[in-house]
Length: 204
Image 1 (cartoon, rainbow, N blue to C red):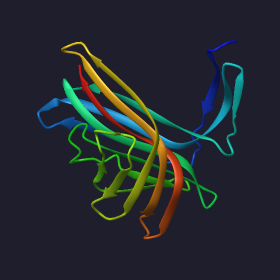
Image 2 (image 1 turned 180 degrees about the vertical axis):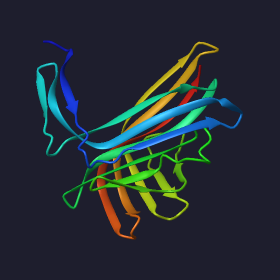
Image 3 (image 1 turned 90 degrees about the vertical axis):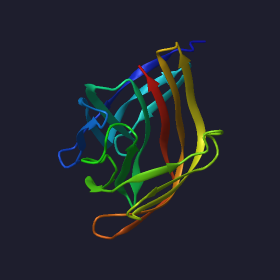
């Protein structure tokens, strides 16, 4: 039995799909910087195989996301990031939430995406039990436009420590439920919306 993974996928950015790009630095070192683009709700097509099981991506129902960045970082960093893409009321919906990495005073990566348009949020906080990442998390924004509960299903974790090089990662996949508010005041409700959230500490 072949236990390897094979396949390919293609993500598309429709012309009307808006993206997020920020360029930020660190308070402790303004010469260090991070330039980052994120795109949610990108239709996916292709296939992959794990062992003898094959899976297909349908661009009418399946999404992927792009996270692309370049920069000169500081040595020690801890970031919190969450992303999801899917459908609400038969329209593409997604979100990108994050903080802890660089000084976010001049720019935020906290956005909702609905029907291809971005709706910007202010500060977002993750409430996590770091003793057990598989217990429920909570997410809320200081502008009261996002209140989500997150029920973890799987913690893809790793821990590497070589003294001066260290990386501790918890990338948790699960389901979101709650409410978000768009720029025009419209409310959207999520129920078991699949996505992920992560807590990552790096020294390198």
